[in-house]
Image (cartoon, rainbow, N blue to C red; front, side):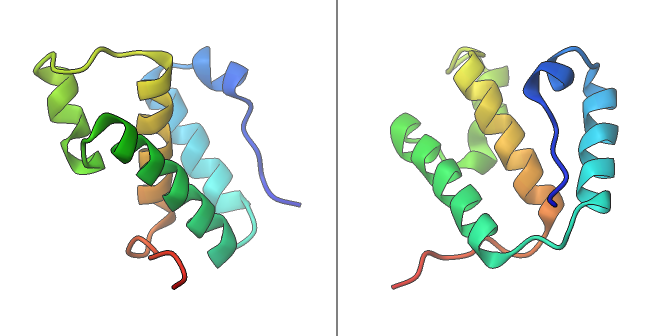
Length: 95
């Protein structure tokens, strides 16, 4: 069974606590399959398309005040952090 984290638990943690919990969950979980990585990449690309902003530029845009920190933006940050922690280069969608 895959390891899971509840968003309610994550929201009650400090940033450092979230990082530790994510790291522990990823480490304890089963190996991540290509299908999961493709789904994660698709969700991230949807945010990039909606906001017309590449994920690597997201933090700078937040810090500069070009986009507000909303729940949706926080989800995008979380997904990007998770994807980074899972490693491997971003998987391109099948052709």
